[in-house]
Length: 400
Ligand SMILES: Cc1cc2nc3c(=O)[nH]c(=O)nc-3n(C[C@H](O)[C@H](O)[C@H](O)COP(=O)(O)O)c2cc1C
Image 1 (cartoon, protein in one colour):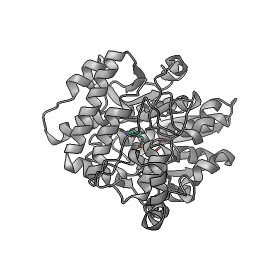
Image 2 (spheres, protein in one colour; image 1 turned 90 degrees about the horizontal axis):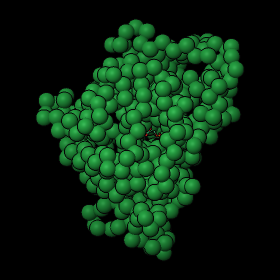
Image 3 (cartoon, protein in one colour; image 1 turned 180 degrees about the vertical axis):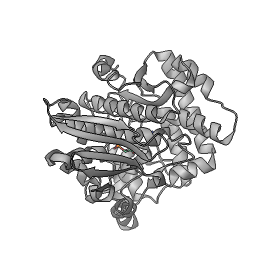
Image 4 (cartoon, helix red, strand yellow; image 1 turned 90 degrees about the vertical axis):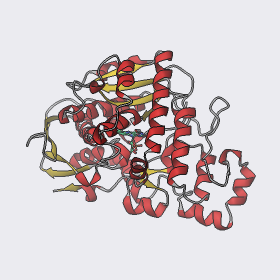
């Protein structure tokens, strides 16, 4: 069951700071003392008292009471997506939704091949298919109606003609969040995913739960995370999508936030009292969390596999399956945390002509060529309830 505190098994990760302040070492009294004066002002500025509420979070709260095509489009906006770039534009015309890529939201250094960008669009497509299905509508999905080089990623034609389906997954849409906190040591029953695992043509899930392979994969994640943080250009691009201040969240309504980092309530509150982290401090925290929390507490990893990770339709279809996996995990009460550092480094090395240091080990762990391993994630029984991430409004992304 999810709780809001760190346990003895998984001690709280400290936010690394140049002044050596360790948040985990702060007692409640210290935090209370910090909560007045400058710290108190900063706490308000950084949204310590308004997490998950206000305009950027409205869709999460309003979705269940929405109806019709608006509800379907909103389901797309609530989908998981890389770095919360929300890479979509949608055009609604009658019962048809056209989903377009927004190229200004690509991350060429962290996602050099575009696999995550197009997978994120696939996640939005599938969330919409699921929302429509739960209302009794069939979705006819046509990928890249103008060819794979086009920004027109999908056309979804809805026809209301059958019994409702996917109702459990649809009910999970407003409760699905990426959970970056610690997971318990309880094993995960993977049979709960079987029904969904082959629902999308051309994409499947490969599970890695055997302890030795899992540990090897965990070490590879840590190494890839270090490689990203050592690459100043890649790290800087990732940092540009981090929103620290509440004003920045209100302005952009996208990107990664402190609330979504899986911190304990106390560490999160303290982090909001302190000055915003620098890029390098944030990177140091990420490497430490990857080693001591993310990989140390993963019950299993899932890898979305396709025939060819460079194929645009395979990227979208892989994303569609990923969305189903995440909603299934939510419906089962499991935490899911997308972790793509290894493939981000493979694509970055390929694009920059550097020696490929990850593909061979990635392929060995998957038991198939690296060209088949599209996206990956960890799952487990979460210790904490994840925070909400912001979303742009329907008016911002939907036309028609
Ligand atoms: C294709 C894809 C790749 C992602 N890669 C990562 C990742 O490597 N690390 C991570 O922490 N989150 C990753 N995420 C999760 C997103 O950051 C997350 O979905 C986004 O911030 C929105 O938050 P939400 O899922 O809680 O709604 C990924 C999501 C998708 C769909």
